Length: 489
Ligand code: BG6
Image (cartoon, rainbow, N blue to C red; front, side, top):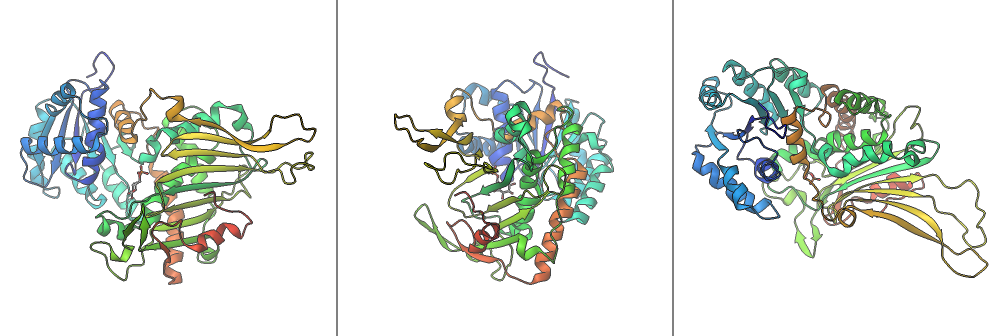
């Protein structure tokens, strides 16, 4: 059922509706879609969780969180319309009988269903089975699965198998919210819309690439979950590899879901395995100790609330990744990501090769190479470092390194940077899988990540300490310095 704007009426069923992701991201994203007029008037939002809540409790919960997390403030009219969509259903996820009550709620409208699994992945199978037994899975329904899907390749297969028993691959939306970020999507336009970059994007022109995803936050009450995962499973296996694959993939035939996903998969499969033999040379893992952030003292990882004092889980990872294919052989991709770093700051820096010959030797001895910086967040933008002559009458060429800078906030000052979850929810409602991860991609990413995790555990080395508020362990500087290069700070 679509309205005049082409939006489909759906029952959005949020499993884990009272959790952190729902509070911070999912409910605010749905509110923003409503504000933008992108939700059909018959669309409902059905919060499902274990707690004994009434519809009114769920409305109060949602109100409080929208007030906290919608930065622009709430529009009263839209808010009234939005809360009228809310319904709450208590459910014991593992109890097949309890799905009957959910079925009663869903039958009232008989819309298409968008099931959003924002619970621990280990129960995705139970929920799928419960929905199936209650007759709640129809061919037009879709299911959204939050990462991490599993803990390793084997466990991801088990979860995917359980969900695939009753949902076909074209109904499954594996979410990686980095794929919904404005700047990550812009990689496609930058690379394939500009001949300047289409033609210079390979081992002949590029010396190396750096991808940094730094966060100043620590574990924030998620110690139990995080300690099981660590930065490798929480960030590298998914977000960083997705960014890397968009950056390195061949031009897709078109923008269809499978054309893009086929190309990303080839990149992940071409990553050179990091094994017990070379893990020390190619990776660094770190764990933060106490330090200062924004002038405030913050505790170390092992002193966070609920911490197991002997944990050797990493909160920082640096990797020298290599892609063995025609385009990229010999071009390292240095990845770095961590918690409790000096700032929230994510960027990609493409370092082009130096000029083979310098005709400006008299005024500028070493011509620096061009650098393309793609600022993912915050302060989204694209910046190209170029050399320029300083205006003046002097016969000598005075050369200056300068920037062509496209800042999103200045260039598109009237446009709001859409949150990734808003875009991705809308894509699910409209049934477009391009920005979601296919099963074979998840499995290829686990294969590569598992080999590193195995090598770390076999080595028995503890993660290297780094002070909260610093850029990671000293050995992450050596990782890149060994190749005569340095991180962009
Ligand atoms: C999540 C991770 O997927 O991404 C979190 O589980 C991390 O640990 C978050 O903080 C970072 O997302 P963003 O959009 O703030 O960069």
